[in-house]
Length: 95
Image 1 (cartoon, rainbow, N blue to C red):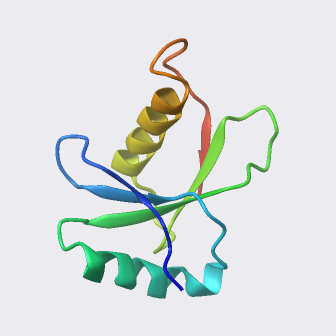
Image 2: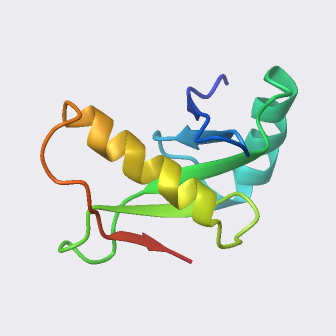
């Protein structure tokens, strides 16, 4: 099964963000598949449902690590999806 992702280059450490649901036990393989498909991608994050409805998004990395760069990429993508207008600060949950 091919997983779609958004590739974001924030000035280094190119990140792929996956917005479709992926079971946690499949994320490692999905990360490998994405990185094999595009060797410029250095990390893969999964956007999952928030645990607190007051927050804007939740990001979980394939390896379960904290990644500031991927958080920055997700904030940019949230802003871009809102037309590049409006607020520029977001509350993003992570591990």
